[in-house]
Image (tube, rainbow, N blue to C red; front, side, top):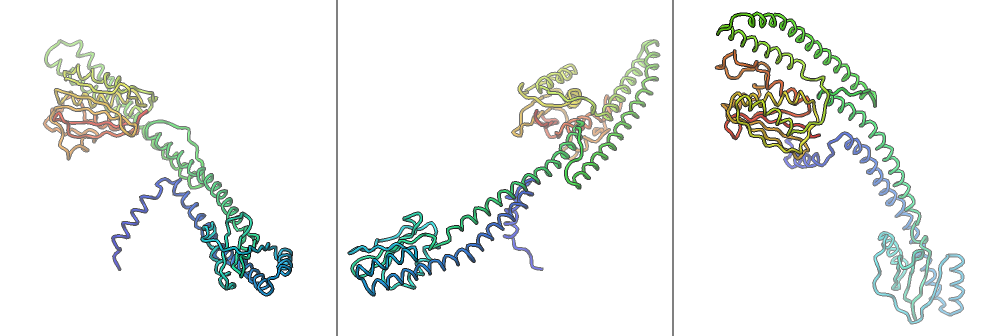
Length: 449
């Protein structure tokens, strides 16, 4: 098998880059391109096989008439014969004849709009006439001016333009163009209607991924409606799974809180001491774990969306880090706004900020707008950080990357998992990187309001 040449791959990539990327654009290309090619092909065939052939016959006929007039005049150049010749040419051939005694032929000729007509008439006159001649197809809108040098002057012949070329040819092109425009408009309307149903399905899928429940009904072609019904069935299954998981963990949480409440009551009534305080700390950690489990399972999916000011959100979260003993620096544009679920976003950002405060002494929170009208919120700390090859592992639920930490430390490894789940549920993403402060950098990117 012959290997494909490198330049062919280059041209193919170049063409692919120029092709439309949307389904709407590609559908239009599939419909319009054949229509345009057909229009060009039909027009070319018409002009080549019909229009030029008709014009050739017309110019040959006019050249024959001019040759007859010239021969008749030269046989008897008397005024009486010229008058009879002019009258006969006017009545039978629709040609006007004039004799310019002592005249000369004009020099040069303006280029005609229809070059093919000039060439055809030039060829026909060359074949029929031996005398010098000149003609102009554009001097008069409806006539052709032909002049022939004869002894004593110039014989001028004015012929109707329809004696030279088919003046109705442009009507054919006009009707072809009108038909193409009408068919293309109809095709665009139908394609737009079909693509709109796919766009609705994509919008419903995106909204469901962000926790927004849209009133969506299948529309469009049979295949699109089939895909929409499959999406609705999948959505119902996922929603049932989430509801069952949330109900299960809520039930477990409720069942565990009852004995924990009794233990807290007994510890409150018992004598204070080191062991008493240690057991209270264990109970507090267990209660925090249960809250984390329930929040991870619930995902704050039932909360309504609202317009949030990024600076206010950052300020609210930073206060918690300050109370935890960290030095926090905030640099956020007060004009930035995002649309989302307030409690969920606050919890996600709080997880990142409190995680930074727990592992570092200095925390920096910055927020800026993106060229794509999105918002970027970055949380930096000067803690020990995480190895780059374990960034993704840090988002795994219940992951504890630092094995040297005491399991009694607050947290169960769900902070980053909850934060990324919330951010992705808003159509954004959460990534990790090395911080300029020396520790970890967590970056939230969200679509703008």
